[in-house]
Image (cartoon, rainbow, N blue to C red; front, side, top):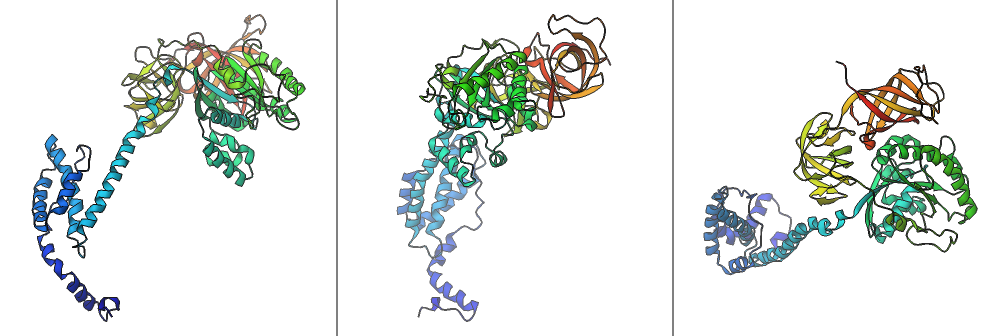
Length: 577
């Protein structure tokens, strides 16, 4: 029996056996330089290109030549710190040889040396492949050079909880090819496991686990799709009443709102009655500056509805008077259409189920909308929606006016931090400049992430936005049980900013029909009245008058989870020191 296969009587004996086996290599060991300097990789070296020729050559060398190589390697290693062009090239090669040579003189590997170096040779093409792949990855998004040229439109999906906003968003993304079939099949499988098979489309927009488990959107989901003429960003707002502040943030970025209502028996009624979110969302969207509203009557495929015209008309009749009251013009600003988010009927293609609807389906209708006129030569105004750390400070927001380009110097208000734009992403595609209406991610230099709060505004230094704490505003009280007197506190939502506010004085009442102002100061205001009041916020905020800059002059007041009033800023009051 081979002595190596048996257990040794003592470990000293084992060492002797090993020693006899590897005795032939001792000569090779003596030539190894134990005191060689450790290898310091040169970070600024040129890109590594495997030198096949050098390797093939080195295989045929005898061990004596290999020894010489090792000594030259030491010299080369000593030149590593020198960062000249030549040194850069040479430092890479010894590293390559260093990989190959110890294999030739490893214990027990005397005759296996060439085989080992051959395996590194096989690895080399793979490394090249990996390198190529790494280089190719960032080049994928900028392939569409015409993407930013299409007009950008931000669409917010609003409506009562469970009306089907996320499902319609997911279905649109699938129909326009933004989500592939395989991903959806995976979602469908996962949803089935949780007995939620009708929710799988909404998972394209509800990405975190909590939203998926409960089937409720919490944060504003973002996605984008393109049609022939336009580039759309979907903002999927939460419908639940606890998350209305998030919904206001989403609506403040939108140009166009899609109010999703459920035609299912009982669901439309709950959404529309007092306390339902259909009314509140429509009103908040109007306040946030959304001019055009598309009302999607969803769930028309439901057995209780079955594409019935009567039910569609019934929903329409109830909604129109209310939307009119909020301030939408039914003839120009509102467009009704039936659809089914789950089956995708009437979203991209017209459906046979619904012969009575003659208009365009949803996506073609969006494409045919007239262009929004935006001034790109105005002052830069970018309200910040969110911020995070990622190789620097990154902020998200919609550029309301002006244009931003790379390396531009901007000022962050109200703290007056001067920042520089390092890079610009418009809907995750890197660009050099961006115009108004685009949803941007900016990487900034010169400011820490902790120093930014949502509601801050990026401006150009020549034209800073106004900031302050006290302002006069015209307010419409929408829903409040008791009276409102000076000293009343609420939460103010203005553009993307949320701040505590106090009504310090009531200046006058405004007649709704004639617009006349009362001569005397009112002592209180109650529901459905319009007044002009002076408000004071807890901290300094950025705002503009409604006349100068409507997007930053509209606001809502909320209290106890309800929207109490909407208003517009009439005048900024200078601080008295």
